[in-house]
Image 1 (cartoon, one colour):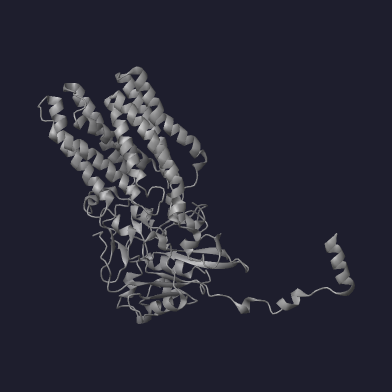
Image 2: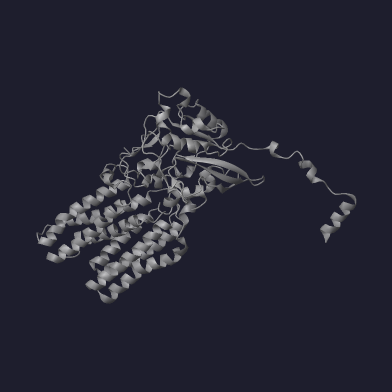
Length: 291
Length: 244
């Protein structure tokens, strides 16, 4: 799959944003006044910024409001609803922290839970697709939830929790890659089943239907960039989990250490997300003899 | 509404004969020609006369080489377009309701006025049947020429999809798979019509008729002569040379 910057920024930024908002909503931090304004502002900026980036992926973004209509069947629509509801639910909590109104509590906890529901719906946009076996597995939602939890814990400066989350995230990432590498074969789609010609013999592409590129090749048969997959996996692992955990362990919850650890984690998340798309093989590639 | 309608009273679709298709691309041209005028946004081309031409097509013809275990390879031409699946995954993923399957005849269509061009339906389709038009930013797909097949202004013989009407070898057939006596149902039953990628559970309506077995007539009439055993001097040489 084509690793479009818009979807990479969308999933990483809004993932981190909702993860952080969950910690703020659950009352893990007790910010007040300007600090509260800035911290909540950061959470909202990340979450909303990510969502705005997702609209750059659209051919007709002016009709984006229509995406709220099909929540009964579509995970993308559910994601829209969940994100807006969560941001609305947490707004009074943020206001209360900032102005010291004392409204947090239950609405904050519900909002925090909704943050993870939002992340889950985002992950299901990808995990629901049977055509992309690597994504079509429970490990995808687990991975997205772990990313949000880890990013949130790092930004919240909860050292012990963040270090534990980094360890879990690293394990889930490795498990995700191992499971993902087997998925295409497990699903069993082949050039023979795609063309129905397997009963005759082995199928090979003789000629494509067109001499130049097309939407399918650009969007779903992205084969460049997998050369460095193994190296990128190590980079993602080090940047998302190892370095942030060490930084927080050595420096403690110092604001500078938190900022650096969060930036490092975010950079790693983007590397991971780039791979998430670049390594994902769509079954339509079988018609082109490419995966 | 992007919920699937359940079993439809009619199941309109195509039967594509891989035995007869010669890969002439007439169906591709006819499809592009018809669907460039009238129904929805035109199928745009980008840089059509340049070094890297690209464009939106609803039908593309691939060619495959199939290598049987005990016979020479054969080339199979393979037109690929929307299969109007019964369990169409492209419909349920749509966030706006633009992608839908008609309850009356099972045709899968896109309401372009509601399409935001997110591309998720194209991701959900195993068959590459949907292409996002680069100019209009909306998803394009085979309509089964819904603006021909019910069109009373056309002569009756033209009320079939453009690709079917134009096919010079009669490799494409249009009809109702819900009717067991329709041409397509009978052809599919007689010839062992195939579903593509059945393991993905999409339940395609279109069927592909496999190439017929080329049996006895494919063997050369000279074949028995090839098995001549050398005798005499040649036979002696053959035995000696094989031993060295």
